[in-house]
Structure formats: structure tokens, C-alpha cells
Image (cartoon, helix red, strand yellow):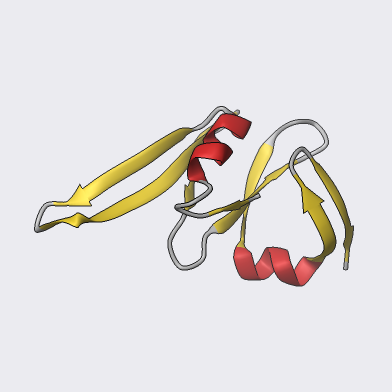
Length: 89
């Protein structure tokens, strides 16, 4: 799932994560938004700026983060919520 400011709430529900929003003190309209995803090794932060990052659920149910360019260059096909219906290139 591509995590962007528009999809961060849905991603948080999907993975059991927590949305992080922090306004810049000098400009309260400039808000940093990210997602903290629980993992066995602690929280992992998914960035939403610059087009976002992909949150990927493995077959064992664990989550990992892949940069947008890496994900899109390695996968083709359709990726749907809860499963990957795509082919690894």
C-alpha cells in the first residue's frame, strides 16, 4: 500500500500503526505526517512526503517499508489490500 497523506489513516488501520503529525513551530500550516508501524524490532516509520513509501505485508503477516522507486521498479501487476497480485520482476 502506498502511504501518502491521503492514505495514511487507512494504512494505520490496516497495520495497527499510529499516525504521527507534527506542525512546524514557525508555520503551523506546514505539517509533517508519517506512520509508525509496529514490528518485532520496534516501531518503523513510513514517510508520506515526496510521493510516499510503500508498506508491504509479508506472507507471515509482518510489515516492511519499501521506497516508492524501489517498489515500483521491482513489482508489476496489481497490488491489492491484503495480498499482492503482482509479479516480482
